[in-house]
Length: 161
Image (tube, rainbow, N blue to C red; front, side, top):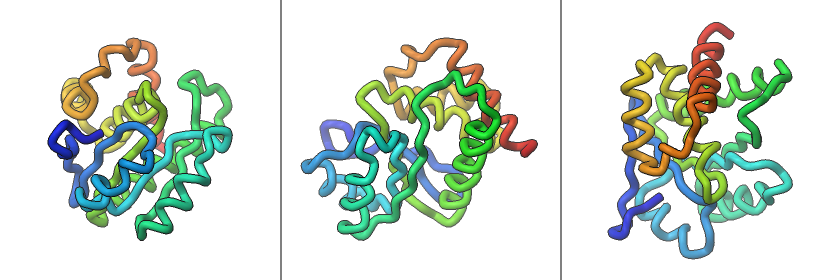
């Protein structure tokens, strides 16, 4: 999410950069393109009209990734396996030098948790991951310890899978 001056709080990982914010609207596309965003990852479900963002990305020349999940209490191993794959794919595009913008809804909870899991997947210690999370999302204090523990476990488990 861009600040008042149109700057995005990028976090560098490997050769790429990642940030996140709200679902892009009509006014968001110009700042995203001007910030040299190369990929947009939609962390929303089909019910949240992910296909609309896909269409806008393709029209704008951006690459699109879909990371559909909506809850942090996932119990099915197949759903967790998909999340592990998303962490691998995001890491790969960052290693390729992507400027990746994640978006979900206005709470930014899913983006925050996915980012925290990504940090753990890429072997950042929890204190560094937490600082990185707050550098991108100052409202991350709204996340519960249970949610952060879930995200850290997700990142660690993806390493093993």
